[in-house]
Image (cartoon, rainbow, N blue to C red; front, top):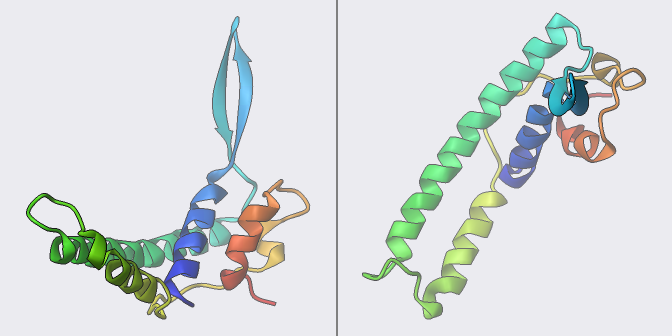
Length: 131
């Protein structure tokens, strides 16, 4: 999986905490997170995937910060004539393959019929959804 796919997948895995719902508490409204109905094994698989992809995200952030320091001038800005090279380096990092070890999930694990997981989240999860 490419790093940009891994970062999108991480964001989608984090969205599996549940869905936001507005509830009335007395006379006031507040937003609560209503957890999805997932088995303990599925929740652990999601947690393992989040941990693995978070390590990839941290490594990317560290490398990106290093590139920023490398390209910045004394004013703390990337000179106009070097922005293309900087952007090219970032793009190259995002297109590189990750070393993440992921646990595959199934549609049945996510209980899609019962859990209203948005299609945009499901699309980002495709790299970890097995047949």
